[in-house]
Length: 117
Image 1 (cartoon, rainbow, N blue to C red):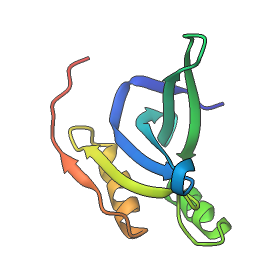
Image 2 (image 1 turned 90 degrees about the horizontal axis):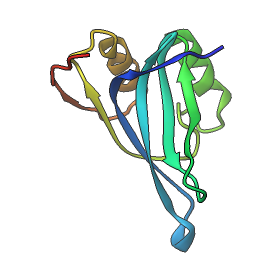
Image 3 (image 1 turned 60 degrees about the horizontal axis):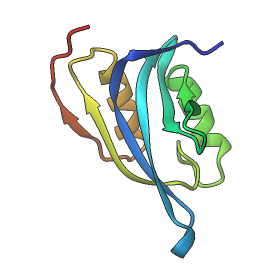
């Protein structure tokens, strides 16, 4: 079972899905979890209910490699266009994720902002 720590937000991923008039942009939080990282979309539905949806997660680097190998285009995020990835390097757990994303060819904007829980 995936357990997400919503207090530990490593950063965000912005993706685009669709084309033309049907193109939509989504902000996805990158959270600490009982894995390397969990990518969670948090939103409010049409009835005003707060919702969360798992976009993806990486158990470890080997799991991410299998995900990329399983997609026809060899990427970690399928055919979704990655607009931006940001990571807060205050969290030591973000560094292995940074290395993984760079290895798979993604540009990552890094910053350091101390977070107090």
